[in-house]
Length: 344
Image (cartoon, rainbow, N blue to C red):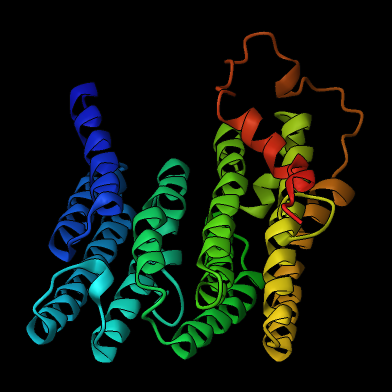
């Protein structure tokens, strides 16, 4: 892929997301999502392998179905109210269909099946793009219609996403699939609190993006795609190996890392609104996801410590290519040290 074509594709992805976020009309929002989806397809299929072609096809079909559901919902609402405005989505049927279509675009349960397979068939950089940037536009639209969406639907989908995200990641040895289920689990927290405090939902998803970015960048830097690869990364970079373990603990929501901040605020909000049972369910499901995060951290930090070896390890060689740390270093610092920024 030439630099010019790559530049056009990246610009199209950025413009599509910004167009969706800044539009007040369903047709313009749909157009931005379509531009975004069509632009990322060449990036997913870039490796020229069977798995990449399969991932591209699955991504295209699910996003196309979700876009059709968006058009159906907005058309029915315009037919009954005579208004195409995003904030004017008043019809209950239209609101339900729109919420399901946005969940499908994000990869939240119960329409999550495409996300782990697509991530497994792509490169780590593309997986980072799908789990972070591609979620911004649908989350923005869900934020805008949150006042008109039935809370029961959002809470049900959120709890289901937490359970599936936790249970799905337990038996995974592939890091990309594990991060896909981690994304589903985090979307569960976002969707659940979206019904009660949309601003807190935005804070949660952006905190997750900050935490996920350095994990994928470090895995890309060390070419780690499975747990077995991760157990030998200390030969490449001991600093990154320990950093990934800390980042995994932060993503799981353990204090005193940044990942604890949004979960604590969400639980506080749920309890303050007398939703103690829902808060208890959220805590129980977070314990499930904590299991596979701790497994990765235990594998890295406890089972494979650096040992004395007569052979030359990679990080000792002089000709090692310098790694890009422009994004990796600040996001890794934010992931572990943002806990004092809690607004409470």
